[in-house]
Amino acid sequence: MDTIVEGLKPIKHKRLSEEVAQSLEDYIFKNKLSPNEKLPSERSLCELFHVGSRTVREALKTIEAKGIIKIIQGKGAFVAKPDFSILFKNLANLMDYTSDDEKSKLSELMYFRRIIEIGVVKQVARDGAPDGYLAEMKKNLEGQAAAYEVSDLNQYSRLDAEYHEILIRCSKNSILINIYSNLHYMLRVGMEKTGIFPGSFKDGLREHNELFKAISERNPDLAVQVLDKHLESSRKKLEDFLFSPAS
Image (cartoon, rainbow, N blue to C red; front, side, top):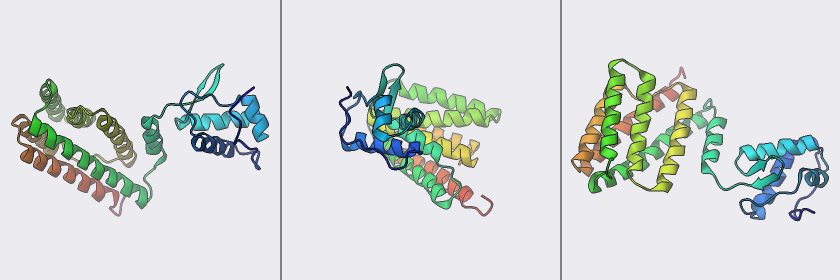
């Protein structure tokens, strides 16, 4: 006999799996169910909601895609551990950036990224990069230069993103690293959807090298100045592209 049933009520519209999914979400959050806590069986949910098994399966799949539950074949559905990565990825993939409001969100993400990176770079340039990180940055810059020589935009874009992620990893702060990683995923998806790469080979490579030099020399004021100019330039180019009459 399933024990997690109190608070679940039949829904009025039997045909919509979205309503079942929403009711299950509300139940999980309102009752503060713990990770790995088992939900009622599929049969029990069918009886509770007065719907068919197909509707229940679709509802469970819907909230599983959101990272709220996990479905284990042959065992049932369980409350999942919180995973912000899934939340960020779902949000990134839902946005299509066709409206001015959604375009503004992409610009705001760039601004948020700027705040995070400047704070980290100021600390790293002041205190010094942890062992091995300067060597990793230097190797990355060599790869950027090689991509620049052959005009390989895809490779340069990948190394550009990796370079900024190395900077964040220098903080050694797991929460900050996780937030930035997901933030950068949202930015990358948005830029792919809009077809914009807000920067240039030449300027980007030069500024990346200037930033590396400032960090190596433990000059936080210069490091912040270089990075601020670099990211603000990228944000302005992005806005010009997003809100131009042709976009």
